[in-house]
Image 1 (cartoon, helix red, strand yellow):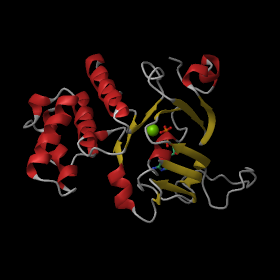
Image 2 (cartoon, rainbow, N blue to C red):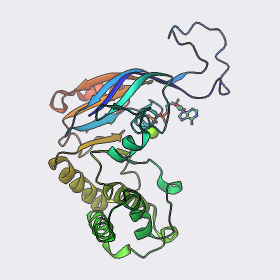
Image 3 (cartoon, rainbow, N blue to C red):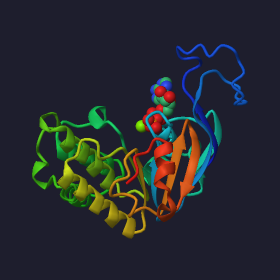
Length: 252
Ligand SMILES: Nc1ncnc2c1ncn2[C@@H]1O[C@H](COP(=O)(O)OP(=O)(O)O)[C@@H](O)[C@H]1O
Ligand SMILES: [Mg+2]
């Protein structure tokens, strides 16, 4: 379980915005506008959660707290019962994260080496690493690209390498931040099917998106952020399309 309590995150001390007059009424102490403000959220084991909201609503900031990539200004995050702040390594092992823009996230020159990097750091046998890399690449339809150089790949292929890297870690919780941006339809379907597999094997899956197509039917719950706060939390069957549109989310 990922457990977030009264989480607030502000960037910088006073980034460019002079935010002068005080007021604001958010009751915050530090400078700057909160990108995430007073958010409490549980991701249950085995849950498929959609985290939606328009650009700038705080989605990326929120999920970057799930494995300690950011430190809270206030509030706490626990993963599988352990505070992330106390054990970032455990959080990173338990929570796989696929970033919005993987261009800078690669650690190796070739596809296979990049996907193997995480499993190598888990101290697995060579056979097990090999098997995981093969399985993960097959899952994202890149089985033939193991020896390809990442710099030669298209944007959509790179996105899939990033997803394969997270799959190869076999995490308890997988978080994908806008994973479909550069993907064509077959690749998108392949990734969705793999997410279904993970979900049915008991992993929790968090998909961050501003576009709910194909996703609502899969999800157990939809959470919509607006200006850093949770504006809507609902069973997908009960989500009102007009309400979504009001919050800046394209209805499915
Ligand atoms: N590195 C950063 N430095 C300063 N402000 C940031 C940074 N990243 C995001 N922000 C701001 O925080 C808010 C939330 O951004 P973000 O979490 O990226 O939202 P989303 O993922 O929903 O688009 C936005 O106002 C954004 O401009
Ligand atoms: Mg984002």
